[in-house]
Image (spheres, rainbow over the protein chains, first blue to last red):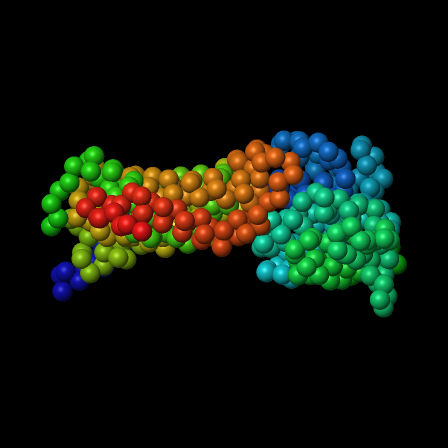
Length: 211
Length: 207
């Protein structure tokens, strides 16, 4: 009996000790982790709005630029980042998160559109579990760059905003290169991104009508 | 009670004679998963070496007090605590790598090497040799992973530590990026070691 009681007390004590240790480490680095995540998101937003261009500023600079040039609003139950031109009040464009099922798991991305929601400014995929070297190439610049300037319009039957074609076979400006060897990922991206863009356009119109 | 062995022997055993991956075939899961980029491998190795040596040390320090019947529970708790510390540290200071390693840092908890060493060595030996054993086995693991990563990254991406080392026209071998590439590399490596450097006391097999 005594032995059993000792086991329980012993386990309780070392659990207490180790959980306190872990909690202390967690508390000490929590702020840093949150800043990391914030900077990551803000960098993506600035990038898809085309505010950063080719330069890659430091984390502190990103926080500063974001603070000055971007306002976060929530409209129609979605978060929208409004980007402003330097110093001024003119709206440069809107950025909003998109997401959908990929080939292996969910894909999350961010899309930037111009102030009238007439064309895409930039796009980024930042969370996915696609095959490295194949589907994962959707987050590479050669893939995302193609989306810049693609015209937006409400989807009708058989007319999507963009198509992903086998590399090098696209003719129209909205026929982009898919990823060779990752047909599944390409199809998935084409499907969910068209749908999400269409949904954003619809929401955008309703909020315009409302004023 | 096994006969105590010298420190030099502990190191040689951990690194070579009882190399966890090549000789004992433990820790294969992470070997396959994190060796497609050298930089990820380096971080993973550092995490495992830290967890392993600290867990062995702690288990050994507590070995006289831990009741036999709850020792696995205590070991799991100790290992898990160190793994969480490693995970938090990587997320705070190396966010990009943390994303690339994904679940595998957390999975160090179930890495058979860690539990194996705690159970087989640390719980019957004094703290210093246990710590040394953890380090040696950890470096033994690292040695294999680095070798595999140094094959996979150049063939799969054409780079090493992010620097291009293959000629411009080189076509990357996609299979090297995926788990099967690691299977083949590890298999060939283990075969090579077994065939040409047999364990002391083990006969070199002909043919």
